[in-house]
Image (cartoon, rainbow, N blue to C red; front, side, top):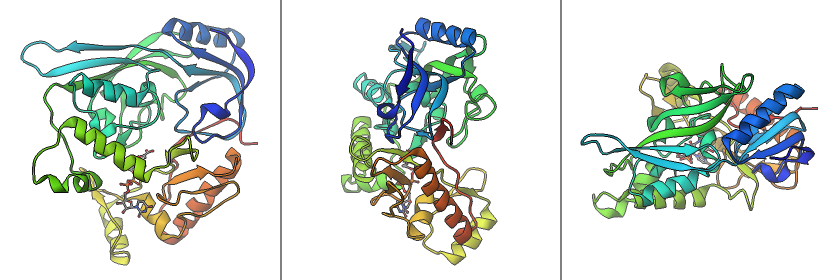
Length: 344
Ligand code: EPU
């Protein structure tokens, strides 16, 4: 492991925003990670962990040590008895989508709806990735993590992680305190596909009630994502830029009376989640251009870096959208990606 000074992070974030790490290292094993953390403690450097850089807004340079996870390793363990359950323990540095594909090829099912989500396995529980009717928390068993301040290894159960919609303890009370080293998930050898999400149901309309295989569901998810979401290699972006707001039922009913076409997804607790994309689209932002950045033409929830913008310019566009949506609909949008680096 080599620690370098003054390293550009432009190629390491999918929004292709400029910004430099004061110090930077790439760790290929948990021992290297432990050594990097020990170095940071000795030198009193603040630690920032970078996964795939696909859910990050680089607002400027990052002081301290930036650690990029590059650990590898996938293990499966059949659970005892007549159970169809297989536990998969996956190193934090493994690519999420490649792991999903691998699990399907090994006839372990349950993650097909989360196909093609960018980023690394270690980041998946941090923001509780979710798509097409499934959140990773529904398959999550436990994770192992190193505590940055002590180097101690800790284990977190599903309950410990306090998962919510795009939320976990690692974005709240424990933010910046741990580095996830591996994640264990429970998958099934028995296919049990869920195609109830509208876009997915539409993709299988013609199959006359025949249930698709998990691989077919995974393939359909990939096609839908490729149609709707821009490829970061072509148009730099970080996926959904805002969380979908969740409203109390009364508030939702008032809004729906005003905007009868507003879609809403009832939640278990009676609240209603609504698509931020619809609000942003309706407010006329789809395809709008800011300074060097804009709102994607095909999906209003995705901001794209169209002409080498800075993090500040992108955050300004986000702020303009937030203010406008608040004025029009009385709803406060919350950004989804994490902001790293100094806003000068
Ligand atoms: N819509 C518009 N205009 C648009 C796009 C969408 O009005 O330009 C409306 C439509 O009514 C559509 C609805 O928004 O039916 C929902 O759109 P979509 O199915 O694309 O889902 P989303 O709510 O915008 C969420 C996740 C995505 C995930 C999809 C599919 C969040 C913040 N985003 O988006 O996650 O892939 O559902 O499940 O929850 C990500 O986190 O980066 C991400 C892409």
